[in-house]
Structures are given as structure tokens and as C-alpha cells.
Amino acid sequence: MSSPMQSLKKFFSPKDMSVGSPALRIAEFAIPMLIGNIAQQLYNTVDTIVVGKYVGDGAIAAVGGASPVLNLMLALMIGLSTGVGILVSQYFGAKDREMLSTTIGNCITLTAIGSLIIMLLGSVLTAPLLSALKTPEGDIFRWSRDYLLVCFLGIVGMFYYNILSGVLRGMGDSVSALGFLLISAILNIGLDLLFVAVFGLEVFGVALATVISQAISAICCYIKMLHMREVFDIKRKYFKLTSVTTETLRLGIPSGLTQAIFSVAMLIVQRLTNSFGDAVMAANVVVMRVDGFAMMPNFSFGQAMTMYTGQNVGARKLDRIKSGTAQGTVMAVSVSAFFLGLILLFGHSLMGLFTDTEALIDMSYGMMCILAAGYVAMGVTQSLAGVMRGAGDTMTPMWISLFTTVILRVPLAYAIAFLTRTDALPNGDYRCLPISLLVSWIVGMLVHVAAFLAGKWKRRILDY
Image 1 (cartoon, helix red, strand yellow):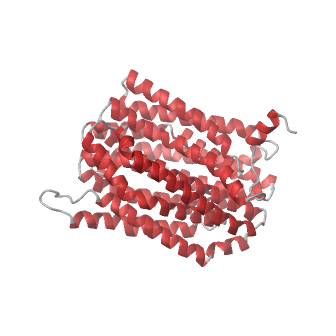
Image 2 (cartoon, rainbow, N blue to C red):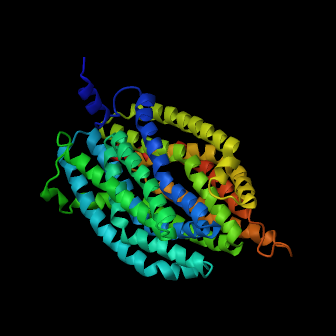
Image 3 (cartoon, rainbow, N blue to C red):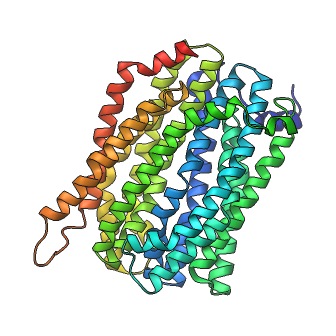
């Protein structure tokens, strides 16, 4: 019988997903991941709630208007995190200690370089991008600029947390990353209230709280990795960039490029959103914050399927991938439907957490109801895309995302806005925003199913 200390150590240790029940292994990974993603979503959500309650609806619009610019600059991080996660899961599954150590060392160096690039670019481009988006002058512009500048100057903590937690998850340890994130989320809430409610730092304060909290998460992840010497080594020689860097970029660039183009598309949509005025800007931010929680099951199971597939590819247990895909997708859709039911049932009250303006609450809830069916569709999309990425096929999900976002969603939003223009609505109906997003999600699901059944991703496995 194992001692309590041994059981605790096992709970926080890497998990081999190439053995045991596929559904159990996926759930063991996805559930802590889901809780962690919810905690991470709290960063932006608490920021929005605090500025909405203590600063005003204009501050909500400012934080939301800054998000597409921030996401554009974080595209590089998304790419690195994806590439590193795939390689770590495959080398961990193959029990290749040397290559696992090299991958982790290379990712630490790449992250330092990427952080410096984004810090410089973001600081220089913040004001011009906000102007190009026709961000309203005055407080909203100033608040958006302050929020972004603080985030970019403190980007190193955000980068390292996301990359290092991705390394831990690649080895099947989603519990440790969860623990660090929960501590950081609680700290973020406390700092938000301190900086805004007590010190009156407005939007600058919530950005500062987020940067400090994520830096602490990154430090905790690195300390955890220093105590995992039984799995891999952290030595100076592994920090030197090698051919692993090229492979990381090959796998990660499609995801990073997808995120970059997606962010550009969102900037274009944000420009349309801004044309509807402050009220729609604020309502859209509230919807996107609640949307972040609705999407968490889909993203969590998608990441779980990537790591599960990667480990089984590395272990050459390809028969487990088919059964794991079916079981993981069913779980993803079921959990997503449950979360969606809660959001629709309590949605009006959820919107009220952000603002006391009744018209804003009603507008936000109406937009959320339009999006409802799309979340179940995204459960299928994220699971199948996760399997394809774990097998090394990152290009197919990239092309599908580009099609649904750039070619479909953006033109559709503008077309609906144009066709619904009236004297009372000179810029069109603001509901073009959720309607176009819903259509892109449903079409994306159908195309992902077709691509998965076509089986290009299987050839990647055979080439491994």
C-alpha cells in the first residue's frame, strides 16, 4: 500500500497516456486542464468585472477593444506552445530522455527571444493599431493604450507561463499547472481590487495585476520542472538552439500563423464593432468574457486529445488513437452541452456581474443566445483538430480555421451589417457579429469532420 506522500507525488507527476483506459486517461488530463482554463479565463473576466463596477462601462469597452491587439501579438506564443507541446508529448511517450531534454531547453531559449520581440513590437505598435481600429478618442483610447503597454512590457511572464505549463501538460501533468494557476488567479483577484478599488489605478491597475500574477505562475512552473530530474535534464547544453528548434517551428508556425490571421480578422471585426458605438462595444466584451467560459470544455478536451494522440504516436500504439478519439469527442460534447445549459439558465445573472446597466445586460444575453448552438459544434471541432495536431498534421486545422474565419466570418459580418442598414440603424444590425460567428463555427465543424474522415493526418503517423 502506498503512503500518502507517494500518492500525492503520483498525483502531481507526469502521466503516461499510452496505457490504461483511453477515456480515463483523457479525463484525468482534461478535467484539471478545464479547471485551469477556467481559472485562466478569470484573469480577463475579473479585470472586466472590476473595471465595470469601479470605473464604468467605458472601461469595459476599453479592455475588450484592447484584446484583439494583444491576441495578435501573442500569436508567436501560441505557435511555440503548440510545437513544443506536440514534441514533448511524442518524446515523452517514446521515453526518449535526451530529445525530451533538448526540446525543453530549446523552448526556454526560444521563449526568451520571442518575449523580447513581442515586448518591442507591442510597445511600438500599440497606439497606431488602436487608431487604425477607430478606437474612440478620450478615456477609451487612453485606457486601451495603458492596458496594452503594461501587458507588453510584462509579456515575459505570460509567455513563460504558457510555454512551461504546455511542457508539463505534454508530459501528462495538467495538475501541477492547475495548482499554480489557481494560486495566481486568486492573487490576480486580490491585486485587481487593491490596485483599482483602493489605489484608483483604473485599467492600468488590472493590467498590472495580470502581469504580476502570470509572472508568479511562470516561476512556479519552472521550479516544478527543476524537481523533475527523473524524467528529463535541465542543463546549459540543452539551451543551445538545435534542429529541434526547426521542428518546433515547423509544427508550431501553422498554429501561430492561424492565430495571427485570426487576430487580424478579429481586428477587422473589432473595427465593425466599434462602428456600432460604446454600448455594443461593451456588450460584445461581456459576451466574449462569458464565451471564454463556454469554450473552456472544448479547448480543454482539444488539448487533451493533442497530448493523448502525441504520446500514443510516440509509443507506437496507434490502435488507441481511434478509440480515444471517439471517447474524447463524446466527453467534450457532453461537458460543453452541460456548461452551455448553465450559461443559458443563469446567463442574465452572469451578465449582471459586469455591469448594472439593464439595457447592456439584455443586449449581451441576446447575443449569447444566438451563439448557443455553436458551442456544441465547437466540441467536435476542437476534439478532431486536437487529434490531427497530435499526429503532427497542424496544417489541415490551420487551413480550415483560415477559411471559416477570414473567408467566411469576416465578409459575412460586414455583408449582414450592410444589408440591415436603415435610417434607424445607419451602420446595420449589431447582431451581425454573433450570427456570423455562429455560421463560421457550424461550417467549421462540418469541414473538420470531412477532413478527419479523409485521413491525411494518418499519413503523418506513418511518417513518424
